[in-house]
Each structure stands twice: as C-alpha cells, then as structure tokens.
Image (tube, rainbow, N blue to C red; front, side, top):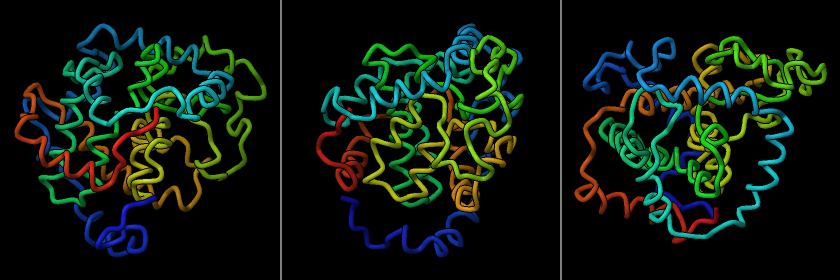
Length: 290
C-alpha cells in the first residue's frame, strides 16, 4: 500500500511541476573535485574495467536474455530482508561500468540523496536517491556485473549508435536477426515505454521492487535513470508516448544528482543514519522481497 502523505504528489503533479521542475540543478553546484566535462568520459576511461564491461554487456544483452531474467527475478522469491541488509552488501560493491568513481555503492547512494536533500526536493525524491541503485543486489545472486549495471537500452529493436560503445553490438545475435534489428523491431510507433523491454539490470529490478511505495515520478527516475541514450540523446523518441515525455522531466531532474554528486569524499553515515532510518520507515515496509 502506498504511504499516505500530507501532500499526495500523484494528485498534484501540476503543482509539483511549478514548484520542483523549475528548480533543475546546475551541475556546477553539485560537482566537487573535478569539472563537469570529466564525467562519463568513455573515450579515455580512468578505470580499465569499463570497455570490457560494455563489450560483454552489448554482446549478451539480447531480447531472449532479458525475458529469461525477468521470469527468474521479478517473482521476488529469492530472499526477504530489511533494506539495511541490502545496503550492507552495497558497502562492498564497486560498479565496473562507472568511469567516474571507485567508491562503494552505498557511499554513492548517500552522495546522491544528500545532494537532492540540500536542494530542498520532496522527501520521496530523497528516498529515490537513496535506493536508486539498490537493484545492484542482483549481484548477491551470482549475476555478473554486465547483467546488473551500466547504461540501459531497449532490446527487441535496432541498437542506437548513441549508446556508449555501439561497435560492440556487432557481436550481439539480435543485431543479425530481422525480427529485432529494425528501428521498431517488435514494437509499434510511440507505443510507450511501459510496452518496451529494456536491457536487464538494476533499474528495472529496483523499479519493480518499489512500484507500490513511491510516486510515479520517482518510479520513472528509478526505471530509466541509466537510459542515457534517451534522456541525453533522444535516440528512442519513436518508442515514447506523450506520458513518457512528461515523466522524463523527472528523469532529467534526477540525472544530474546521480551523475555529478560522485566525489572521492565519503559521507558521514553515522551522522546521517537517523534521518534515513526515519525516511525509510515512512515509505517502506520493515522487510523487502528480493
């Protein structure tokens, strides 16, 4: 059941847009330690895991692979645990696809949520910042990182050349399959992203996990925060409908906090924990199914 809030964001989207969406963050106010231009540098990534990660990701993320993983994991029957146990795991995980940071995932989540909180956004959006990468707990179940993290993209249709390292799709079997290698593939023009299957990973997993607890704008942030070829390059407008375009205002609002809050200074979890314990208790049940 969704939490009962004093102001229901779902019934007041027009008001939220006036109050919140006009306050898009200036990346320069979020960035610390380095310039905006240094982020998402895939031409010369600072970490040698990045190119190999995307070679594997683009080779093996096929339509059939995605269907298999959805059937396996979206029953949420593997494990049940408090959210804090999931965060304990994220304390040990470093994302091989990320050229911008080698901090563990929990520190990145806190940096993101704290940047959102400093700018005065609603507390449900702060919660989105805290949980947006929690789907990376898929690695708990033995999934390789190329099946969990990294930029996401639609499967079942042609791969856009706006996706990072598009040359690696040459080894993907779907690129040779006439059922999947046309512009629309298995989809219809402007069918809406709710009808489109994305490459498998933590975005879809955490969206499905949180869909009963967080307002729709936050759910779009969770589900599409790694869909860079769309929210940066607009490469898949032909699959989106009008509602998607409205909701992507929220994805674009969230994106700078996810990307530019990464810096080498870890946050003080001991100091922050009481606030986040109260926030989690407000919106989420005592345990979550994974």
